[in-house]
Image (cartoon, rainbow, N blue to C red; front, side, top):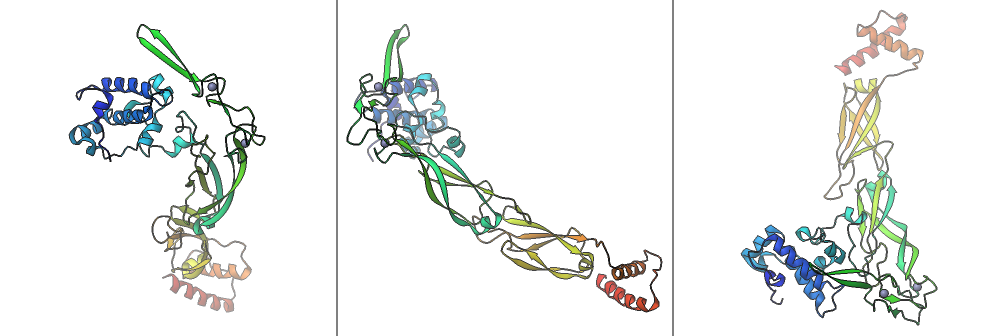
Length: 395
Ligand SMILES: [Zn+2]
Ligand SMILES: [Zn+2]
């Protein structure tokens, strides 16, 4: 790695300069060397140096580290490409967009929200393609097992006939005579405060610097076509509602030479009739009869993959929650699965048969709840036997 220049030297300021001085020096130099407008050889390199120096010296914490340890203190964590992308010429002209080094200047600073809501990609030159969002609905069972699928994504691609140039094959675009290929019209005015330079996109070529005289027949000269592209996706087991997959460079095509946008596949997990999901755990309500609750029973409960046996102990109260370990959702990160929680609700019987009614009346009598039922002596002996069984189970 070649020796790096001193950041203060790069900006032409003294070591004890104020923040304001540094900002002023940066702005002046950045306007002079911005590659969108400087014709000077090496302007782009110079601009990167300036941006990097400014990103460090404008941040009090980084500046202090730099003062103490030099370049080693900064750890070369600023990729020059990132810095370069973070600042655009219009922002400089307007005098903003670079407070604290620019929100977009730091590596990895772009959030998904920036992508969706237009935070990125404002720099000049061929624009990066747009990020796209595609929503996929899956069932809870599919979220549990994971799945591979093919989605059809409508997107903008470079025209294959003209390779994105917009010019009919065999012809070439000509240089715009109005801006001489720069794509910009700059105007210098002398004012009492010094020279003011304004730049605007060339109206003749729309800022491209080229004029297409023989447009490509397939894209009408735009260089872009709409295509619906089949894309394979792999949804991992355990994915949660609202999570997304990021497919790099599968979004809209960028301008010539620029990167394509990314494709965000947002996963919506549909609600399930039987299960409620809380992260990797599942919740289920299950009705049991009051005799099952009183006497205890082994019942079957549905799971996401089949059925499981569950023991309900004698004397179970309504609302009790039982846990079936490992019968929940697989964990996206980490090993194993969550649990299945089964809440039992005791169902009161209705529409009793005559026989059931008699048995229940006898039971009520035994509990001391009701006057003697109108059962015959013979039947009563059978009822007594059942009541005794129930009683011993409940106790
Ligand atoms: Zn074309
Ligand atoms: Zn032009």
